[in-house]
Image 1 (cartoon, one colour):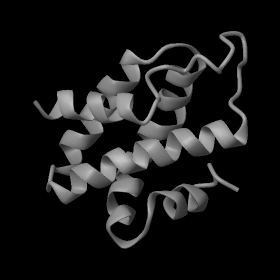
Image 2 (cartoon, one colour):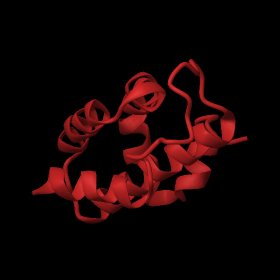
Image 3 (cartoon, helix red, strand yellow):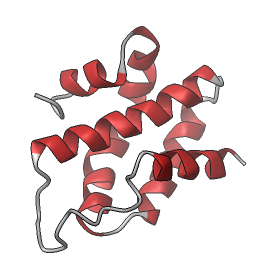
Length: 107
């Protein structure tokens, strides 16, 4: 059930439909990286509020990235999954945008 909520939240923020990212583009522009991180952090924030354990959030984040495609999938796997624990720890004391700025996804 938690995974369904996780995927639904990602869909609501628009990350499951990366139609504006060309498949052959190997890098995400900063605004897209920022948007992806903020959306990801918002999902984690919701899970932290529901007291979902960090280990569960980390596993579900990996599963979520597998559902994405193209450049967004690569970005998620290479950059967002590796900072789930940082976001998890910081999000209760900050905002998604500030966390992503500190992680240098947003400038």
